[in-house]
Amino acid sequence: MDPEPDLVIDRSPLPDGLDERLRRQLTFVAEADRLKTVLRASPLAAADRRENDAEHSWHLALMVLLLAEHADEPIDVGHAMSLVVVHDLVEIYAGDSPVFDAAAVADQAEREEAAADRLFTLLPDDQATQVRGLWDEFEAGESPEARFCKAMDRLEPMLLNWLDHGGTWQMPGATETTVRAREAGVVSGSTTLGDAVGRLVDEGLARGWIRPDAATPDAP
Amino acid sequence: MDPEPDLVIDRSPLPDGLDERLRRQLTFVAEADRLKTVLRASPLAAADRRENDAEHSWHLALMVLLLAEHADEPIDVGHAMSLVVVHDLVEIYAGDSPVFDAAAVADQAEREEAAADRLFTLLPDDQATQVRGLWDEFEAGESPEARFCKAMDRLEPMLLNWLDHGGTWQMPGATETTVRAREAGVVSGSTTLGDAVGRLVDEGLARGWIRPDAATPDAP
Ligand SMILES: [Ca+2]
Image 1 (cartoon, rainbow over the protein chains, first blue to last red):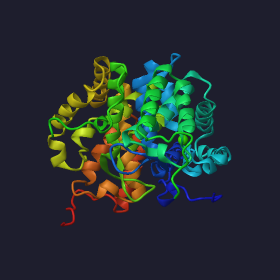
Image 2 (cartoon, chains in turn cyan, yellow; image 1 turned 30 degrees about the vertical axis):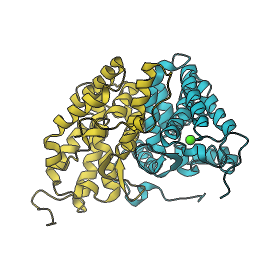
Image 3 (tube, each protein chain N blue to C red; image 1 turned 45 degrees about the horizontal axis):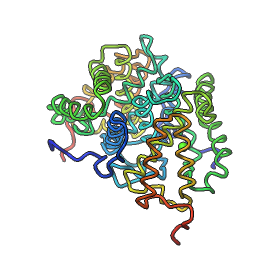
Image 4 (cartoon, rainbow over the protein chains, first blue to last red; image 1 turned 90 degrees about the horizontal axis):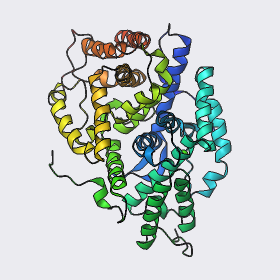
């Protein structure tokens, strides 16, 4: 990681005379544009390309709004939307760590911690603390909202995999056991949605879109 | 507009046995993937391509979260995030209508109305009404949240134009008057942010990134 990278705003510094607090906020908003360039492993259903983190985060916010009734505990929809809107921001510097890629996952926590320190401190101090708190809450997955948001973060790529007839289920590290572990993340936030995903996985196994554990990945 | 297009879900129908309400919700969530393919005129700051509606909607949600303190009236941040998350959904069928493109804007309302009828009715009836209500509220721009969200919808592309040293300010229909009209949309929701955008426009004019009214666009 480059210790002192250029910021997006450096290409066109804001005019003089702006209030310092607003300058920091707009600097962060400009830097956040980078999330649109962080590619995930998931294939879009509606186009032949991979999904980026910004559009993924939007999709989760829409799902929170429409599927909140299926949360096992009552949730504050607005608060949950805040969690998903910020949940992947650290990937601007840390990159995406595909869940079926063990090497990427190995040092993920460390890379994301460093990224959070660098990114969130662009904001005014109180908002750096606020956004850091939202990210920590999502990561911990202990509040009802965080549990449900993590379920959405598992459900969305599984729906994309279903629509793709495989998607990341076809990655070398993915077999029934690892896919079932993702399913469990949905169940943790919503029994109803976990049950629906279980049907997708059962059917995905039956159709050969998910490998059974016994099988080894095709040689490259 | 094709009267009976395929749905995204048709490529991989959901398994039997799902509850009908959930089936409709997931059908809508799958169809919403298309928003990631609707391109806007705005250039990203962080990559050499145009922005799509899904990542734009995410950016607005982040801005609502971080800039709400600048709203002229107190706003409910969660409600405002709901508005921006759904505000562009009808463009899945109606397409984007760039503000500086008079031909696209001419029949925009009619195209979007037809798109709303088609898209939102994929949802269970109560949620179709809910999402339609959010979209209508945003479009009307009369609630404090809608006014602020519309200000974000104006501010974000102006910031991208600033970072691009021109962006859509260079489109044939854009001159100081039309750009100032967009600035007014920011002022309507936030005096503070409207003032900041005014500085970007003043400076953009001074640097030649925005054409004065007297100038005619370059011949094609
Ligand atoms: Ca992630």
